[in-house]
Length: 112
Length: 112
Image 1 (cartoon, rainbow over the protein chains, first blue to last red):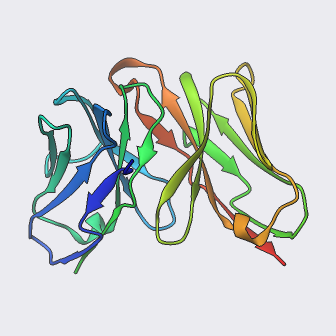
Image 2 (tube, each protein chain N blue to C red; image 1 turned 90 degrees about the vertical axis):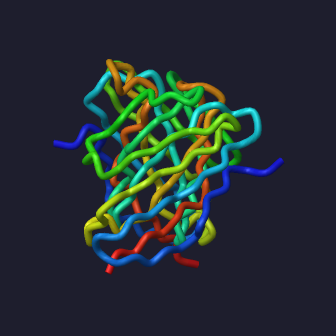
């Protein structure tokens, strides 16, 4: 059975651009969470989606948005990219909101 | 003060040594996770626990809910154990319910 998958693996953008990151959860998992991990720090919670609805949001600006599709895959969108958005973006899926989370390999975003 | 504190930040050990990594937290939780992150970013879930002790191979995790403290032990350490070990707690309050709050991680290097 496939684990959590994320695409792309790496991405380079310039300031002001927009980026879309994608995540496919483990089959049967209905919850997807997004995290940002800046170099040398632990991950920070961005969003949680469960049954296609936003169920939690971390302390991130409105430039960050996400959605979950009927097949439970998810997209994270970041507008007007800043240098400080350079990070590893991790997606994790779980069967329900409180279940054990399984992480994808991450998307490494570099903003120049 | 961070809600999840880990110690030490960095740890170097000789192969075969017994290793302990500590985690203290200041929020109400429903569960605590120990995660392993290798260079390149992928995160693997080692344990999820809400009370007592769990063992898997050479890894042991304990939690003391009253003292808001958890420890991860590695017996007979091996160079392949070299990684960043992250403690994360699942909060049980308000809109953040179900989300993970991470420590900054402990970088372990085991020398042969």
